[in-house]
Length: 144
Image (cartoon, rainbow, N blue to C red; front, side, top):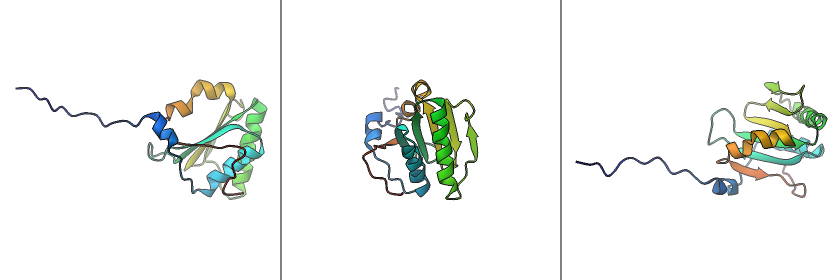
């Protein structure tokens, strides 16, 4: 006797479809962090909506600086802008090196990389099932 109806694993959404799902971001602090990154001329900022994929955060904000000093300046501006909202990071990693600064705000995590580190670690590739919002310079943001 054979069992022709073996259980199948759940179908996984292709990454291309997940990237088309533009997240609806309602957290003002996320928009403020994006404003801070744009103000200091970050390269290729994106927001990944990871809330449906994990329980430790709702969003990853990822941006690139042109040098280690620029990465630190971007992190400083995010911290300053969110501090004005009385929002402070729970933890900051990597600031001294300036290659990859991770700022944990609980509900969202800000990652600021040099281009080399961003390519090497590939968070967007690792979290390709997340909804992705690519922030463009010519696109108005909801909160100033």
